[in-house]
Length: 313
Image (cartoon, rainbow, N blue to C red):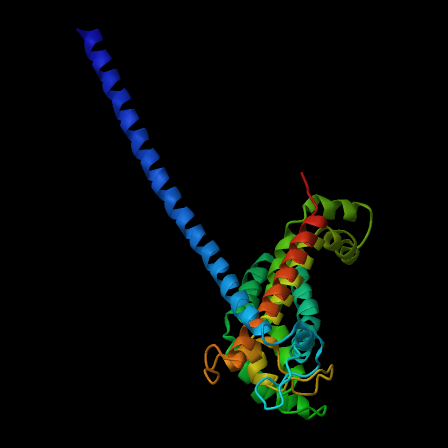
């Protein structure tokens, strides 16, 4: 009798275990399907954006030749004397980006070195969120701050136009500093402590250990942060739209007003150009160039990160 009851209990426990496993399998499948759907939405959204951009850009290039677009040095699609040379927009984009990175790289990397190697843990816990807080400020605020405060200040020192590339680039550099600094900080902190201790055992100073051991070991992450910062600067809209102006010029003079690719796209998307018109399609032509440029930067970033990656056991 006792053996029969034990067998019944064992059978019941076995059935309960099977039911529990079946229920868990169903739950896992449902969760997996939901996660797959979320991932699929992201992929389909990106695919849809690419299709729409290049579909409209194809319509543009049916009316404007590649030679007109890539060889002409004037950009006046909204004037009676139409020119569709994209180089003035690219020139403005590269100029403001170069100024921004000249600010963001030394500031971001210096802050990362200090927070990782010199700051006390309590100080670092306060300063890092304070630095990253800059990334949460709306870009339109940066733009008006550059126009209303930074530009008048700089005009007291050097001759600048009211709208100029220098103010926009400097303000973008401040805006991008948290991006470069945060990723560089994570890369520097990922370097094993044993490398630092080995360097100190050889008798070199802390500063020498940072520049000869730590930074080379964290090079892949640092370069990735810089390229990510460049991508952020290339794609910035409101700051350059407000502070740099809307005069497309093929120039390297930071004191002049320039127009970037994103600023022109914002100008066209304001609704003044009828949908389907050639003026409207220039938005997608410029957008396609911007997309290919940022894609190339991301590919280079991925390649560099894998090429110079240090692996430690």
